Image (cartoon, rainbow over all chains, first blue to last red; front, side, top):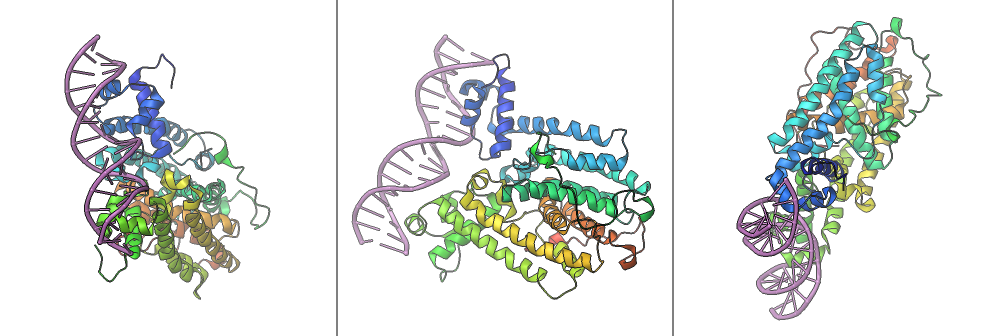
Length: 220
Length: 220
DNA sequence: GTCTATATGTCGATAGAC
DNA sequence: GTCTATCGACATATAGAC
């Protein structure tokens, strides 16, 4: 139930949004949406002729919720490697998974091009920005020029998405935090020796990732 | 429908196994299992008192199907970095996803410790073997000693699992192939200069990953 | 072990009054 | 725009004969 001032349509999208994150698309029923939103059966089908229409609006909403923060960060004025580090260590809900990425594992979404489109667009946008920043970092000698920035960009997105999978399997955010921390350290370790300004090579006393995943509720 | 010689119980597990991969647990109905297995209603509930019991058997089966190949590879006699390379470039069904990892995205599985256990065990086993091999590689100077092998092991598993997410979103195996290829190249690029015996540093003419994901049907 | 019949609930949607 | 009533189909079993 949400505040009375919120319009029905808005409440429906918000409820569907949350439920798709918590349970996925196929597993979310109109009844649950009605109950959580406090909107009646008639109103619901007035605003959205089918469950799929509501899901499309909710999916779009979830993408719009997550993308701007990432885009702003990656296109900001900071040093490229600092932006990569910030992207990889930003707090994320490791045990809840990604509002957007999770949708790819729902067969009803993955086989429906219309529903998959916003998800594909979101990942394509992140990939583009990551590629640009990684290329800049390589040009400054802050990471290896032996690996294609496009590939590295896919690697970083995959690390985050796969980190969720490992964390949920283990019911522990650590695999997520470790995967992201490992990616960042490996990027830095690949930098040409002249430019390396991080810690001396050592296998002991590696600081913990300070469980970035525990804190906030950002995502992709 | 499967061969007549197959026992009912076996046919049920096989059908459930396939359907859980294709559609997930929540979205698979007893009716579909009956139809695909050709086993009648009575027989089904004779062998498995509930859908969950059948799912547990199918999940166990999927883990048993995938683990041995990985374990054999990683504990084999080859050079550590060769084993890592083989693990990362092994053909996998990028657009179908992982039979085991996919289960973490099904809310009904993720919130049921009994169902999640075989999944958690499978990932823990892979993580253990990867850690051992990565540590060996680091000791031989074939990759950076600046990154904890445990973290790298999580990174590699996450790369594969996240690669599936990106490939399905894009409906194209390339993000999967690129993420894995990028991880391997980055590992190699991180090796101390003395031991690097791969290609000279260059940003052009990087060979394609030869779409490993298209070929076979191995998975995790 | 396998079969057919039956049961109870929910899904996703439609109808039509207000 | 919102309400209540209703619908046919399917989900997840259970009952009980063979």
